[in-house]
Image 1: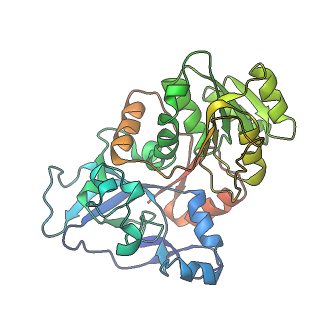
Image 2 (image 1 turned 180 degrees about the vertical axis):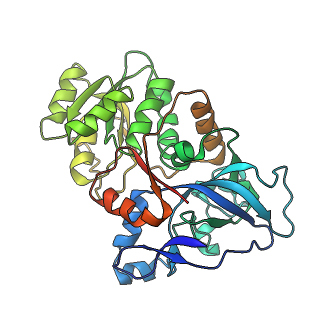
Length: 348
């Protein structure tokens, strides 16, 4: 079968021919129908050889932690109500299944995963950008019914991650409140839609270009601003000097985090979702009183089910650029060049 693999540290990924995998005990083989491309993959491939080895990523590594497919085969011992040929999406943050957090459904915060060598697909385990993939446990599959897998596969991360971030802040986002979204790209443009569907807040969106802000307006932003040195003052003016009740930074770079903390209101939430390498300064005089800074990671399986319910109800629509598997390396070139509107999806 064909797969997109990162084979040499420091070089671009390539499409290669490898053996079709066989599911072992408890595993499921999926015939992949769609796989998403993400900045997290780009981060992994940007690591130095020393850092890559230290984090114990394998080589070669099949990329892709956003996956959807149809069940092709069950390994020995699998007991499930799912059936061969059923359309499913892959829940990505795999956990041990038996620690306290996993028992609550929070496998994204599994406390045993590192010790047991459990890694998400494409981010340590072999991923979804291939004709077939192995899923380690049937509990990491979510049926999607009639949803288009290509249009919705990105919801497994680009939908689940902002949903998890936003859901925690919804009690602060009633009518008359303000939410700021920094970055209207792959995750941000989905987050905007979720805020409009679930909250009463006025949604203010920051990004670096008119093209990015046009996408934000297209998906429902109430106010758009260029993300520059004047953005914080503009937000203060819009919010009558009070600041935003919740800020969601989907970039996570030093300048965007500085803006996020600068516009946070008293008793607000500042949620840093992006992995841009920045950090927040927290202390008296640096952020509003009782403001909380959070660093969420992915989301729970039950939240992924809720995200798909939003999609079924027409509340969330991911902007997608499609690439055939043979052109998957170009998708990463476009991602690196910020040339993708919304999310790139590989279709084997």
